[in-house]
Image (cartoon, rainbow, N blue to C red; front, side, top):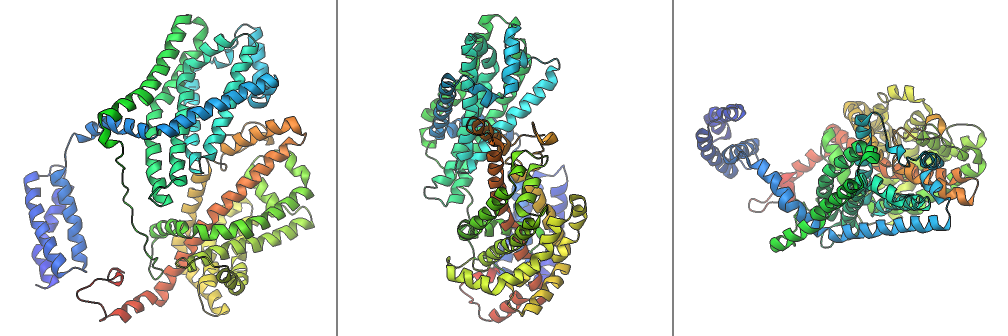
Length: 639
């Protein structure tokens, strides 16, 4: 039967199914009959129309019918209960070593805070700040040492505290992805602060008073931080110890495990905020026994849910302990550059390509790009030390402006700015080389040959993007975003095409015009992703009012920089310089991590427009016409 006749004969039946499936009151019996009919049609199409669109269409219909027939109502709540009753306790049990490590590390860090305070009684001012210590001393003299926890608007206090605790817990988990180093830094910061805080009250003869007041909510709050750290270590260990998986596959599995533990912490974080706002704030009027009972009860709940119950479930279901949740992993496939991609496909394939070429490009960045940047930034710091002796309103923007030299204070800034234009060209060229040689092993000779042929052209093509992004004020840059897509593919054309210099330059402008809409969408998506990904580390809301004091939203870099400042105050008068050097280091790493993704999207954008204009992939398929085997499938059958 011809395909057209097959479609004409059955299209009314298929249309009936679509109408039935979309209606709210569908008939299960009719759906069941349709299931039989459509699966028969699908089998016929798979036999005679294997590579036709009708087979794909019927396959989707069959999946819908299967869902309609086998849909089970009322299972979601039962499944939710099973997660908390069995699945989650088992994940906690599997992660027990990471959770125990987090607890031991936190206790050690707290002990460090105690010992340091014993040696130097002024140490609490370093970690807690002069304001907090001074106000607490005033409250002790007034006979209300924990007055700082009192607030007239308890609801606002509850929202503020819960939001902050949630942020700290999830930040502690999130930074575990970076080889667990970030998690240990946050635990160290919080542990040292807790140890010095408690010993500070001990020196004032108020250890029990502070213990009963603080641990009413601290039992849940501190436990949540430690458990979040354990979840972060669990996630980070997937990258460090992949076992039989690839590192990315292992990271996916460990991240799911860590996220399940984080999900279980949300009720306890909310409970901690409630207790701090409504109970700790009134600790003076509570009898002593009620404080002890509440603290012991809180710790009892934590111990039951995260220690005893997981052990019980593990012993009840021993066969499930070693059962791994296998991900839906796909083998790496050769990237098809002769393919027309939409914006969604470009983003998805760009992340995949980033993973494939990361090791190759990271080697060049570590051995060539980063040392060059280090020399230039050190040169700038030595030339203008005054700039580094204060915090800045929009710190990341001010630091980048200073490091790259586009503040143009003196001749050195102009020279540094010109050098940076070549550094950016080298970054672009390295990533383009990684994309073009993604299927090849790393080779320095290949890298230097590519630079010799392409670097100057990439620098020249990239010059407009470089100048417009760095020189225009932010309010004009918002409008320039709509002009940048015209030049978005210039550097990619210079790097990835083998035409003459003039021909590549002309293609860059032509392809940029044709790709305008997709390029604009990609730019907006990348800007949004950058803001979301970097915000926990340092970016959008890290604004220091008046150049000093608390930012609008403290991030990991703010916390770490504050800690560095307090330590540096002990040993040097120029403590701010050390904090700003840390900020510069983090900003450079973020830039080197984010830019390659944008450059890869340029590559796929160029290949898409080249395919539209030159149809190289289609010509390749024509060359294969008549050469395919009738009995054996190959990759070309599915291109």
